[in-house]
Image (cartoon, rainbow, N blue to C red; front, top):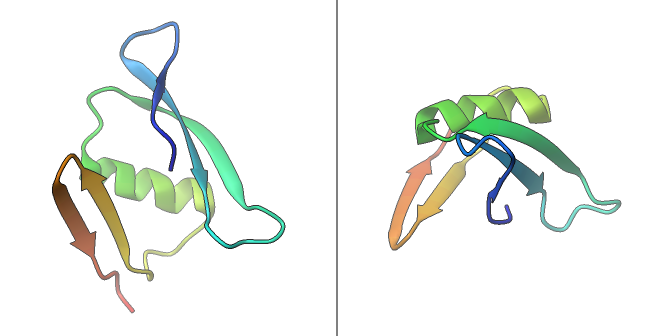
Length: 72
């Protein structure tokens, strides 16, 4: 995922998610509020990608790593 880009409303960010090693590229661009938590972002990603919460995922925030192994 690339760095968030603030748009005209400073409390809203445009994100672009691209799956690695997908040919052709699979990506989504979407907006999130600035106060969105990682837990909320997780569920937003499930919706925008059409997923069912059954894949491992992780978030890197600074030097911290947050991992969830999903339901699978």
